[in-house]
Length: 168
Image (cartoon, rainbow, N blue to C red; front, side, top):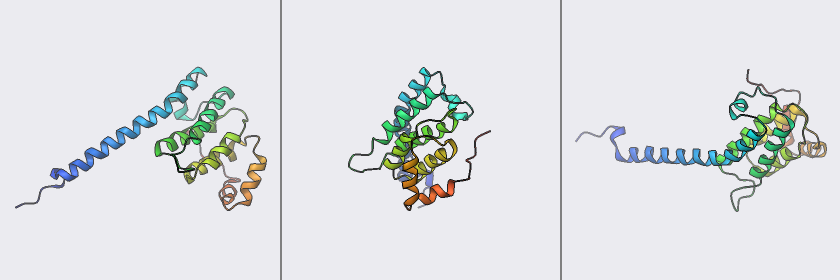
C-alpha cells in the first residue's frame, strides 16, 4: 500500500490546523493588549501607522501614554511566575519601547528601569537599554550605576558609544 503524501496525512493536517488556531488566538490577544494603547495615542493625535515608521517625533504627552502602558504591561506577569510574561505581552512591551526612540524631548526613565527589572526576557531588556543609551532619559542615574556593578551591566557597557539604527 502506498504511503500517503505528507499533506494528506490526517495527523499533519491536524497539526497545521491547530497551529493556525494558536496563531489566530495569539494575534487576538496582542490586539486586545494594543487596543488601549492605540486609543490613548489617538487622543494625543498620534496614529498607529505613524509609529510603525519611527519617523514621527513623539510629543511629551504621547511619551507619557506609552510609559504608563509599559508600566501596566510590565507589572502584569503570568500568575505565579515573577518576571515572566506571555509572548503577546512581551511583543507589545517591545513595540512600546521601540516607539520611545522617537521621543522629541527628555523623559523620566524610571518606567523603563522598572520594566527592565520586571522582565527576564533578554531581548526586551536589550531594547530598553538601547533606548536608554539613545534617549538618555532622566531620573535613573542611580539605577544605571547599580546596573553597571552587576553582571547584567555588561550589556549596558556594550551599548555605550553605540547608536541604534533607525529606519529610513
